[in-house]
Length: 404
Image 1 (tube, rainbow, N blue to C red):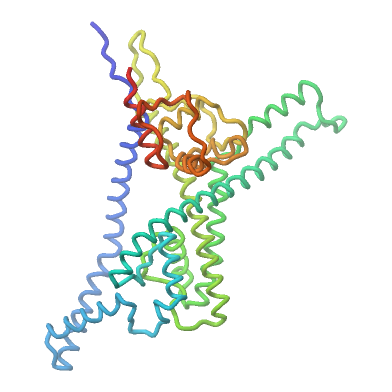
Image 2 (image 1 turned 120 degrees about the horizontal axis):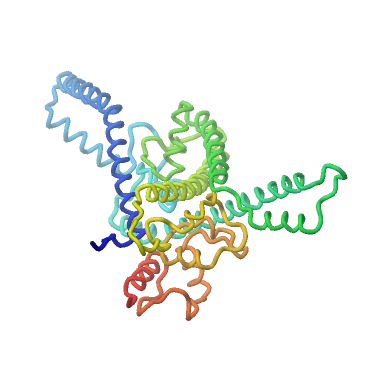
């Protein structure tokens, strides 16, 4: 009886489906937790508001319809920046500068929004360019942070290695073959991605703690509330329930606004960098899960799957997840380019130039006027060019349109 083994499953598709299922499960768990925590307080607030509204209407002889119309008018005024408490003007130059900062950083607190048609139309085009430029700035910031971390860690590793290879008898370094082996081991060394994640996490926590101390003193918030605001702002979630620098005056107002700007900029960069590294760790977890879920075919003559199947080739080597600090294997790099991988820690320091992602590399090539060399490993079959997501889509179309 002929053995029928299913064909190899594309690694990218398998990882995408697994990640989608895990995200749906993550969303369901989060919704259940927040519903259990917040729904009782919401019901209590609704009951208290209904009682106060009824008491106010009876005291001033107002009908419910009149009260509702008055509250709707206040909501319309609130959209334009009118609040019950005295706050600084929302649309003077300082307030508008704070607003455009929240736009291009994608924080979007929501406490100030354009109310005119012209403002809404201008925001569409302004945000399109501003958000793209700021995301590029975050990528360039991450490149330099990873570069500094990698060089510092490699320097520390080299110092530890030199101490280990010193001979205890005469205190001299080994020469000859032993020294060559030591240099080879250093040449192939690379820092762990988990170490980089730990350093970025400590940096983000330090910035958040310092910023929380400032906000707690200047805004009158509790320290835990300040930490909550820092995470919401630095992660660009930007709920808008708590917003800094909104009062009319502060002690040392200019210094506080400068510190607020610097803390938000530094915090967003740190959290963005941390998110990118965590995403790489998540991808490694997905690869491990795919390895565990794979059932190897035992049919005679069945070949092992290639690189672009469920089991990634770089995982079969069982090497530690790390950042490549020396030359990158050309075939593995080409495989990642063809797979459309957005972030690859192994390419960060290749050829003394940090490559954060395929989108970053394509943007740089297009801006510098360096077209793709003919005869490269990827075949286009009519699909070529493009920047960022468009370039990745063209690569995928070229891949799938190859005549086999």
